[in-house]
Length: 292
Ligand SMILES: [Zn+2]
Image (tube, rainbow, N blue to C red; front, top):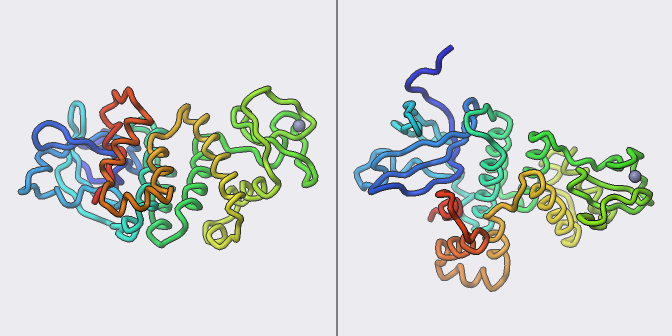
């Protein structure tokens, strides 16, 4: 069945950048058509009817007209505005990071209902106040599954033996998971993994988010799993997410102070420039701009 010239869909804004005099180009994720680029004409004029609604961190319903290069946004209404998510800078920065992971994972115009559902759920959780780090780990683990690269945390990736609790483990993202102490593995790209971190990785794979939210964990274990999953996603998506530099920066105490002095956008730009000095992609900078 041919897709109609004009159609309505749920959508979440993944990134956006200003274009021309008053337009804006958006990358949207939609359940059925996956990722797509759309242009919102005249949106930056004060008289624009769609200006206030076409924002990130919300589930929108948009009416799109097919265009040659981009879809054209003709109407927008807000389905769910996750307003609490914006109250914390760490939640908002995490939301951008998750959007960027989703963006990088998808090809344009391939159905993405599962990734859409994951992102939507992650935003609900951030909005409900779940610790951003836990939401991010949960999202990373399940995104990896959606991409067909579920991390192996039950058996050795080389010899396929079950991992014993009294063993020693190494985390080897290029091989897809955990290596037992009997297998040599590659000379590089491996780090030791504690039993607690291994258990937490399993928990992210198996437990529902309510249970994950209530877990009592040491900071060290959370950090270990954070770095393990970041490494894993970096290998799976073939590079670091640009927004990570920003997310890391805002979590330092000095940064918290600086941010109190309303430097959000400036810092985001610095982080983008640092993480991606040869920013040729037009979305490089706007992917980080935190809406105020
Ligand atoms: Zn082994």
